[in-house]
Image (cartoon, rainbow, N blue to C red; front, top):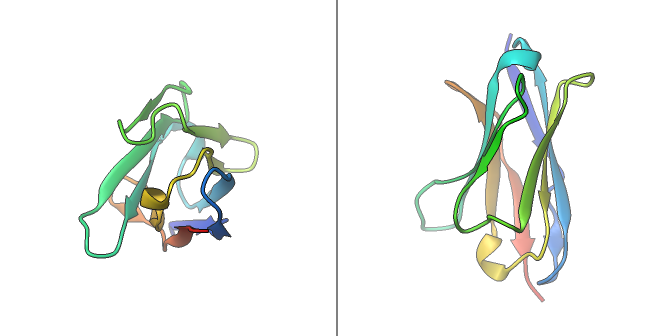
Length: 112
C-alpha cells in the first residue's frame, strides 16, 4: 500500500519559517519524483516544488523560488519542504505527491 504522510503545518507569523515533511512508504523512494502542491481557500491547486530522489535535482514555482527549499532523506524515505520568509499569501493546505499518489494535506497559516 502506498502512503504519503505530510506533516509540519502550523500557524506562523509573516517572515517566519516552517519545515514540512512527507513520509513515503510503498514506493521505491530512491528513484521517484516527489512534488509539493498547495491549495489556498477559493483558489486552484498550485504546484510548489519538485525533487528527483535519484538525482537530487530540484525545481520551484516562481512564487516560492528563493524562499522554499525541497530536500530528501533517502535513508528515511522522507521529503522535506523548508518554508522561509513566509508571507500571508503562502497560507494554504500543502500536499505531497508522487505520480498518481497524493497524501493528505497539512495546513500552513501565515498570519500576525
